[in-house]
Amino acid sequence: MRLSINPSPQLFLIIILSIGIILRFYNINYDDLWYDEIISFWVSNPEHLLTESLKIHKDIEIAPFTFNLFLRFFYQIFGYEVDFARYLPSFFSVLTIFVAYKLAKLLDKNNSFLVVATLVSLNIFLINYAQEQRVYSILIFFSCLSLLFFFKLLKKNIKFFDTFIFFSATLILVSLHLFSLFIVFSYFVYLGLIFLKEKKIFFKLNIILGIILIVSLAFYIPYILSFSENLNSNLDVNYSWNKNPSLKFFSNFYFSNYFGSRIMGLVFLLTLFFLIYKNKSMFINLEKHMLILIIVFMSYFIPICFGYLFKPILLPRYISYTVVLIIILISSLLFKIKSTNLKIFTISFLILITIGNMFTEQAFKQFYKKRVLGKPAYTQAVRYINSSSTKNYSLKIEKMKNNTATSNAIINYIQHLNKKHNTKIKFIGYDKVSYQSVWILCPIDINKKTCPLPNEVKKFRVLKEVYFNSINLKLIQK
Image 1 (cartoon, rainbow, N blue to C red):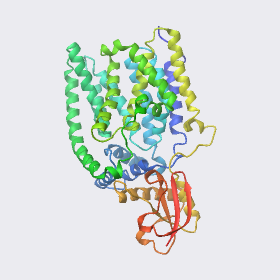
Image 2: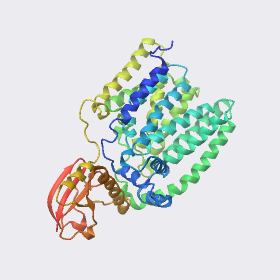
Image 3: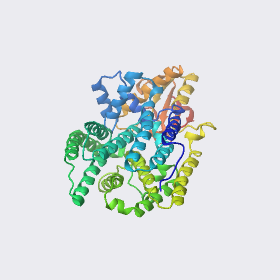
Image 4: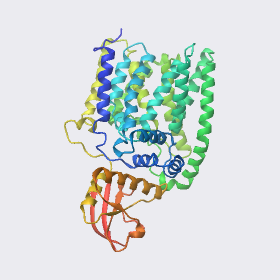
């Protein structure tokens, strides 16, 4: 029996899309940019020559250049303004709701796509990353788009349009992040399992995947070699914050990050395990759900093994695409429950606790309560310096991949804040600090929390010290 849900699917989708849009775009610029966003803002500056952007990217980033190239085109069209920084990721995050809806609809002939649209629209992890100028919202979108058209290519008669979209979306996907290769690898594993079980050969699809794999290897082998060299020479400097998962991780698998709290994560994790067990015949029979499970498994298994054998590389955001896939898998399997009452109760429970969790999150609380800053308060620091008698500042930057490139990125951002807020603070290097007073601006997210004075000015007197959210200011003089 199919679960009847009113209003109509089309109207429901419009409503849930509207809610998703509001949650992703409302107060999008309330927080200032944090460090990773600042470097994207600097690298994608359209005033740079493309070769200059590539050099800056190499100096300051560890991810591929593709996302910053997207941003560069975006800024060329709409203008290089700091207030525009997060609109591109938010736009793709909204599109993900629709693509997830279509993916779930293709996967099953039931109303699970309505549950998927609801849970994706209200997922706090997806909402938070929609409001960050980073690659992850775009990565999630192209992951879902690639999978959607992969399923379409499993049909006997392959359409050129479906082939073109799958090929293009998957190429963009693999160029966005190294971890996207786990998805391509999962495609091969799934097709291999089908061949072993049913002796089916998807010749055209395998040719397409083969071309994608060759292009991916050509793209990533130089990148991996460069990254490995940098990792070996700068591990203590740049990557010491990343650790292998603790034992606690294996009771959670980042679900607390993905669904809003430890309890929420546990509910969704146990639900997923239970539904997989109850529907194990579907996976044994290699239905499409099996591919989703393979992608999720590979996305955890490969980086965990690599981390224990070599260096830690796993972070929740690196496999952020699994959030939507987990939601799709849970929603689809929920509709396999034979008892209508149990089905309605479980679906209602998951949706209601997701809505309830929103009341603990800033994304929803901001509608009835003043929002709390969550990122470094550069604007407050800039205004404070501007209101003082000393308008000059220097930066505390140490132990980054490239200190000069990091300084240039932050200076560029502060210059845009100067323009936005009509302030007139000015950066000066340590070589120009003599007997005049100067503010040392220390971003705590990339420095020690105590923010000790840089070696160049460690003997200077601290006249005043002020803290803002993740920003420390010290007024110093020789």
